[in-house]
Image 1 (cartoon, helix red, strand yellow):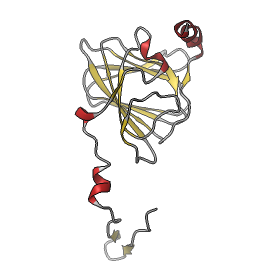
Image 2 (tube, helix red, strand yellow):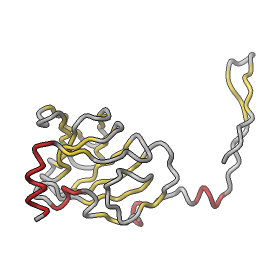
Image 3 (cartoon, helix red, strand yellow):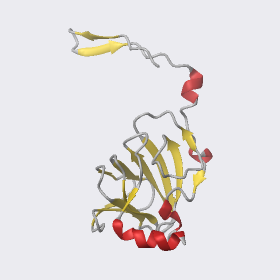
Image 4 (tube, one colour):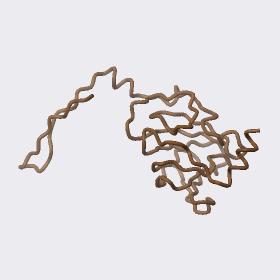
Length: 179
């Protein structure tokens, strides 16, 4: 448990001043991830093996969803959010799903379609460095609409987002895939 920081308000400047919380180099190094060393998770979610939803997650930070099958997470110390990188071939991405927290999508490469709602009828197109934040409880999905493999940065607004909730119309598809 960390101790309280020593901070003070300076009336003359109208600003707060203080010293850093103590942290040693080993702890800070345990909080670094290198993209090239992240463990790929090609079956992280139930839909990852379905046509049009094949993708690989690289979990950099945090724990993710209760039912996320990660091969490894580089840094688990995050308390309030989770970060994944998603790599997908053209026309692949995630099926409609929701989490109990907001989820931010930022296109790093390529073009991504992020869609939402019960049928995924509403959508936004993201170019590199564009992003969108989807509120918790809203069904959302995404798809690489570029001509080449692309990478999407995904930030979930909780260390553990609970279960991944899938759109109701996916139930027969998942049942057939399970068999």
